[in-house]
Length: 142
Image (tube, rainbow, N blue to C red; front, side, top):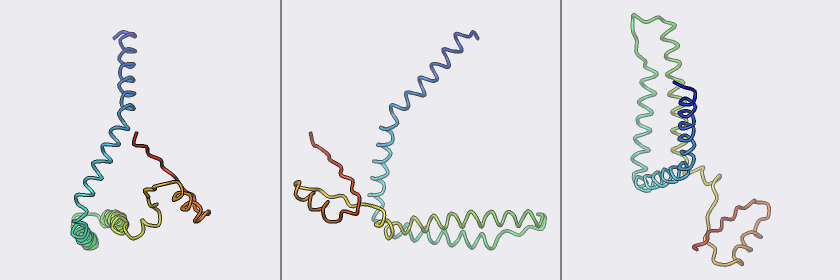
């Protein structure tokens, strides 16, 4: 392969990789819309899905603590494997519990969006508590 052919192929690969940067915001927006639609669809099933998650988490903990005993395995190897399984189940358990309790603690970290009708309403809300930083998002229909 000649040097010109190799550099042309490398330039084409680089241009192709850069073209993804153009489409990345569109793909991220489409992915976000799909996730929001999925969340709205399964929102009414939250209790059933949360209960199933907790039951499966309990099954995983019981299976991990019982462990599989094998006469052919080395004792140290089994102990390391059991510790690794317990660590993985613990991390998954903490993440599951954190995600299941989002409705109770997420109010502390999220802000409320308001639809304001005029500037006087905005002024009264801003002057209400001056110690809290605010982010004002202005969207124009035109």
